[in-house]
Every structure is written in structure tokens, then in C-alpha cells.
Image (cartoon, rainbow, N blue to C red; front, side):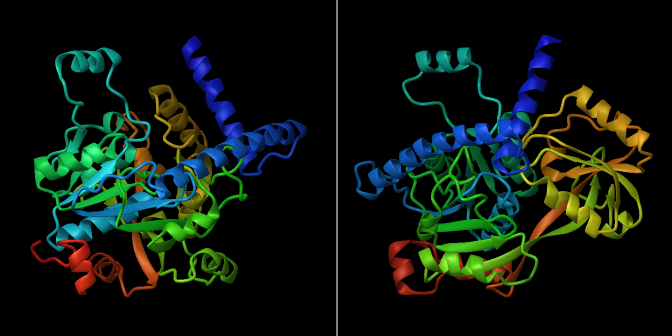
Length: 412
């Protein structure tokens, strides 16, 4: 009981902090708290700049692994829609004959117990191997052990290896040696400097590119906006189809030769949670939402975009509940959601795919529970995603073939 109370208090405090960072709170307490966070941002910014300077001047060194390394990341925390881009990229590379491994740090995944780590350290001379979420054939870990995104990627990408480890140099070497991988995709790897990417794909959320302009923890920036210059390609995500001259001018200021690819996260269908995904069973078309009374809930960085999708598809949101990003649902949370949905006379509950992997069992719901499946669609910068992958990862010129053996698809 006490632990549950403490968890709820902690969640309330974290939600309050998010509201202050995003400017949703303007009371006196929020102003004072914001000033404290801003002072902390100065320290964080100094540490980030120092770290990058050490790598840039080769005082700290990255470790090449002798294969193509594609980095997908962003300058901000959460909310840019990285996972669908990583999934689409890895699938396109796989379909072109590459042996792909996705390397993730497994954010919010359940770490091995201390006794297990200690026993391994005593009985072995080498480091423990990375956690294998998928060997390309089988999925071995659930979302709690692997993390939400690695589990989703493993489930949706047969033929692609998915590994989790904070040390992605070690994970990359393991993927090459154990599985014969020739292409490594670093999920959320823009700030991971020990393994240098030949291609850095930077995602920018067009609806909220850089937040309030402050570094963490006062804002959402992991590093200064000027570090746009480190990107090879810039993906503008969550586009509404209209050009944004101010954003493009800011990008051009720091990256004049920026190759910009603009894309949208497009809803595909609804999948019922108590039916195993993979076929048409348990699916509903998007038209099914029109005029239906639904109760929406999610624990993601940008719940507004998810709720807007539902409204744009014609759903009537009779209730909603927002949780912290990566929130792991307990049975009592789900029961409260079910009760609230029934009280509002909802016809069903709808969540995101990322939330769905954190729901242990939706079978106890008196109403059907669905998740909304999203995929990436390019609207500017390439005819389609496959063309973008070909242009980025398979440049047909001698320089690419000399610098990155195997990038052109030829045998190194």
C-alpha cells in the first residue's frame, strides 16, 4: 500500500515537472521551479559541450566496427516518432539483402538483478553478452525485459536481429561475430559517440521542433540546436504537409547543405489487443472509428498527437487518460480505465502500439481494447521511403564503395 502511494506521488511530481517544462503551468510555484531547472540546464549544457569537444579533438575516441552504421536519433527527448522510422529503415535494408541488426540501449527495460551480474563477474573474465531480443527468427524477451521499442521492433521485423545493451560497441561487435550482420542501426543513437555512424539521420518533430529552446532539464533539448550540423540527413516528422519557412531557415543556418526528407506518421488500422497480431484477425479499418464513442489512454511523450489522430478519423473522445512516457500499467490502473470507460458509455478503449506492449492482459476488459497502428509515409524529399533508403544507404559512386565496403550492395 505504501509503495503504491509513493509511486503515485512520484508520478504526480514527474507529471508536474513535464507541465512546467512544456509551459502548461504558470503559477508562482511553477515559476520558481522553472528557475531552478534552468540553473541545472546550464550545468547540463556545459557537460554536453565538453563531452562533444573531447570526442571531436580525439581525446576520447570512437571505435569503428568495419561495417555500415546508420544512426537514427534526435536532439530532443521523446516524441519525434523514432521507432516507426527505425522499423521502416531496417525493413527496407533487410529487403535489399542486408543483414541488419538494431542496437538499442533498452530504455526503461528491466535490468538483470545485482546478484546475477556479480556472479557473472566472478565466474567470467569477459563482459556479459548483450541481451538478445530477437535473433531474426525468434523473439526471446518481453517488453519489460527488452524495453518497449526493442520488443516492438523485434515483433514487427522478422529477419532483423535486435540487441539491447548500454555498450553498443560491444553489442555491434556481437551482432557481427554471432549473426554475421553487415549493417548496424543505432536506435536513438545520435548522442552515442563511442560508435561513430557513417550516416546520421536526425529526426525533428515539426509540431514541436526544439521545445522552449532550453537544454534539459528546463527544456527538452539533449544538445544545442546548432548541432544540427552533425546530421547527414534531416527527417521532418509529423508534418501537416505545409512548408515551415522559419524552421527551414533555422536548419539552413546551421546546416546549409541539409538534405531534408519530410514525412508523416500515417494511421493504418486498429488492432485488438486480445488477438495476436500478424494477420487480419482482430483488425478494424480506420473508417470503423467514425462516430464511435471511444475512451483514449496512453503513456507517450506527445499524447496530443495521438488524440488528434483519433479525432481526425472521426472518433468521439468521451474520455481520456494520460500517463508518463513508458509508464508500465498495473492491474489496478487498467481496472480504473475500464471503469472510467464504462462510466462514460464508451464503445471501446484505444491506445498506442507502444502502450499495448506494456499491457499484460486486456482480456479482463468488459469493452474491446485496440491500439492504433502507425507507419511512416514520405511526402517530400523522395518519391517514397524505399527511394530514400536507396539514396542514403546505397550511393552508387566509387567514393562510397571505397570508404564503406558493402554499402553499394557489392561484396566487400
